[in-house]
Length: 173
Image (tube, rainbow, N blue to C red; front, side):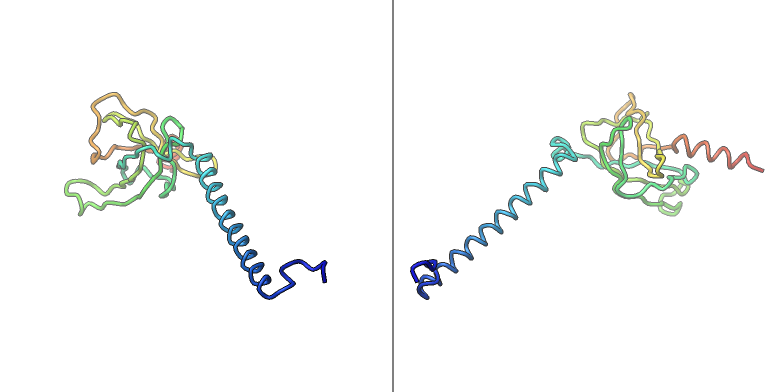
């Protein structure tokens, strides 16, 4: 019949039509994957910002006594400078007295922070707990003294909330 599409007229044309349809479907699938990847990258850039994706980071460590109570700090929690998120907590370990002679048991927190931040020996690092119970490492000051070596642990201290709770529990009968 003259009104039939050309791919239904002969077996040879039907095979060509099927091959072209498969190629169009493969092209559509490929374009879908590429567009999806572009969207994922765009979302990451929108969330983290262009600069922070490619900014060189440094790995540092902070030391807390067992009495400091790291207050629910977990791997992946934020590291902040003046309340602004700049890095993440990489690992947390309890070091017993046997590992480092002459030191009481303590907690070492490994974290990442951009290299543009120079941490000095008199820097103030505290663990703060938000209203929702999430804990963060927050630099209240990067210090002004001598810059610390990368392998040197900064002495951290508990946040204000932990200090208040500790003083209340020690005052209780």
